[in-house]
Length: 194
Image (tube, rainbow, N blue to C red):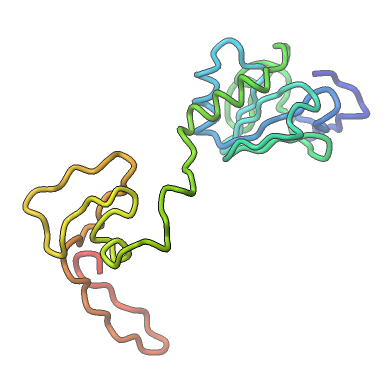
């Protein structure tokens, strides 16, 4: 990263405000996914900035203009990033997980790493909303795979594919009766999560 005065402005605590899209672009993602992607990339990751809730990967300038990976954002020409001080490698605050002297990361490798840690994308063809049965709408059977039980609680839980959501705690029982609300009073909750 260069310290060109036209692309960087001094910030607080030895940070600076740097324009993306000049010498590098950045990809911002949440900290959880970002740290998993760093682990998956290993030694091929470029410079990486970690903030309390986000991770920034520095990649070649212009390479994020068509970025479309969910749960991440490509930062280019119209964006700014606040890199930490050059020698700051520990929290608190933003710090360099991988230092700025490393070569910029490969955008395609980063894309593959982020997609791998997120798992497969859901497709819209998983559920045909027009063909749902009343049992599926009420939650008695799974809308994805069709498994489930009847309106009574099963004697043993039926195996569900991993993609299916767990059953709600009151599965198979009638919902608790609603309590009337009076103006100015909060609705009371029933024992057992009602």
